[in-house]
Image (cartoon, rainbow, N blue to C red; front, side, top):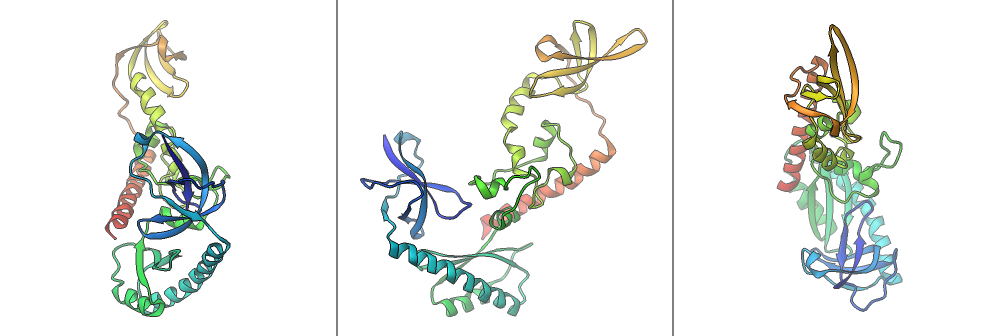
Length: 304
């Protein structure tokens, strides 16, 4: 077993695990830790607990110390410097007429580097900008291109549900979201209804996807021919989570509809419905464009 604590450097942000050693560290206290980018200050969001060593993906770095009043003051001074650096960088972006949008500035705790985060539609040649910023701040400068999801995560806001955006409250990483998820969950393919504040497909489409995938393996497709206690019929709709099937049946020349538990229905021919609503088809094209943009965002982030 190994003792760990969970530390978050920025809110919102990913939680990283560290080895507290013999230190007694309370939740919400500030700690100084060693990272691959030097010393950092972070807040303890998961108090000390023990986990199996085989569950760790990499050796844990140790907590150096609990933050002192001097450390906290230094961090506060860095936050003030970030605001000044933001203004200076914006002025220089205008000077060089660069088509980029600065979103955030981050000073590393030990002042070994300043990170400038920005969004842009494509690749930006910012070499001259980096040189001038380095001459002004006398330290290492790094510019990082981020996607629109990360931009909204830093800005904040509320979703259509009325609650704070998931990316701003608890999401550590963005997972890939696809049109397929919306189709399987039988939600509207209208982009305005399933797009988030960032203009990309909503992250929450991913939450129940595994459940839907598991259930859909056992359920008939819409348009499938099935056998029920009232005879053969065609599947008209499915309540996936409840596993309820609505079947179109015929009694002579009369047509009627009835719902059955999936367990009471036998699949004869599992052929899906091929007709697609023209309006839905048009929405699907818009959503495909969103997927392309999301892949482009990811490629740009990985490339910088």
